[in-house]
Image (tube, rainbow, N blue to C red; front, top):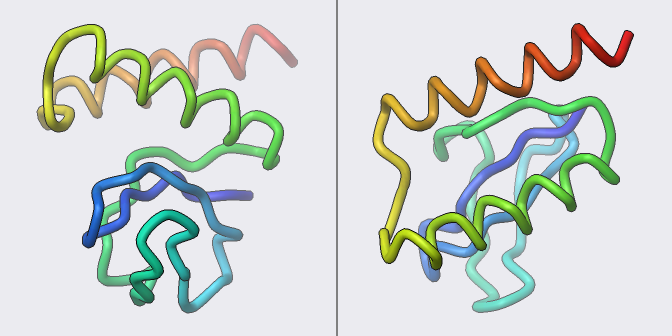
Length: 88
């Protein structure tokens, strides 16, 4: 399982293994503790994580927003869970 997070330094989306303790941002070099950063989504594998991160970035850019609202995050989780159930 992988967690989709956002760097507290540069606000770039990324992902980590759920048991990873620290993340070094490849964009700005900021090192942060994973447990101190809110997770947007938990996904099954890193291929999914890469695709979802790209789509999240595109969505924010297209909508000219800086971040997801709490409602949008919940909707994202709901859509992912629905997609996952249909996949199985």
